Image 1 (spheres, rainbow, N blue to C red):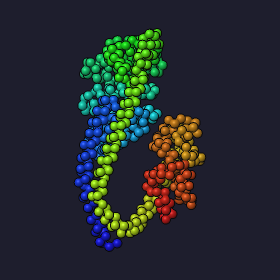
Image 2 (tube, helix red, strand yellow):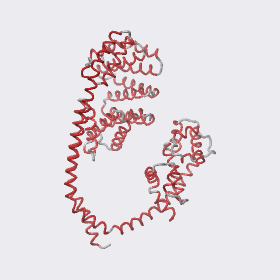
Image 3 (cartoon, rainbow, N blue to C red):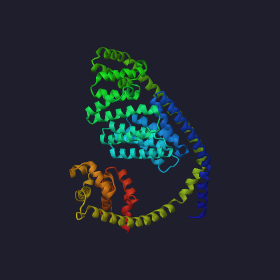
Length: 529
């Protein structure tokens, strides 16, 4: 390859970024301004209870941040609110992806607002509980607690830590994680005792009653009804009926305890503070707030009053349905119009950018083609040499890992614990029965075959191998596939099917992560060593 094409290639490589630098600066500033404006617009729709539009603009703001460090606070808040609204409409998986993405980018960033990190972790823990990921939820809550504890020790503000503890308690109680709920209730009570020493008198009066109601709800949930009733009856009425949130907790307890007359009275007190307005409420409001009042009065024997509520609801039900449909249609129309405007703007920007770079792009293509064959040959040669060296390292690593597994799974180890014994059985099952070749094999499969539960499987693999069941099974599949690639002539596609991973793209991704090369490169390197 002569020097002239190389000179032109170097010139083009330098010229293209130089032409794009100015555009990139302008686009970054425009994107930040747009992200902030979208966040503000989302909050306005949020306050107006137009949730579809609020979610749309929070999403737009969150996704506009190519570099979140330009405004961590706006980025984190938009992402948090976007995830919360997705959770509210049942898109739990999507909400978790947003939260984990933000927390991943925040890792190690000193400028990331700690208060937002606590909120993100608390919401993530709630979602993990909802999906049954109890251990993950505990880890998220523990990290949130440690972060808020550090803020409290630095700033001296104890109340926010107490509120976080209360939210974690309620989330675990709602998810029926009663042992964990009891632990956090004790933490709440301890933090509140510390807060009372120098805290606000009004907040202390409010939360003393609320903490007592928390304990009542916990005792009721675990079946200790007599203790719950004793504590509830001892709470001064002023600590319940003077505070709206406490009235709501009280009605929850009273309805579940079958004390309907008292529940009906509590609803009446709450309605004096927040009178229900049937003419402006949605179907969700009728279902969440009005129906419980009807049930309380009916079961308390106040049939006439219950019928009045039923008549009122029936009278506005049709209009509520029409109003909800109208509001949804109006929000969708705005969403459609916004989308159309954005598409037109993006198209115009794209045309301008394309015209500006067309000549240089054409020159780059011509120069690049002139050196493509040489570069390809050189690259393949270097790659093969690199893969040979890497393959030797892989063999050494596999040997060391095999020796470690042999030591951990050896039946001759003195005084093994129950966890180690279970790990030995897992290893034996994987090596002798090759259950990992079944695509459906997972932690539940291991637990079922070994006659234990998934928690013990998780504990054994974490303690003895520092790995999750999914990664443990996939590593066996990858080693099995690597052995077939080396020792057989079977096509790569068939080997993938035999390994137990049915999706080829997933297999290729996992294989490259584990061996730092593709299956085809691995086979070629193994056969040229």
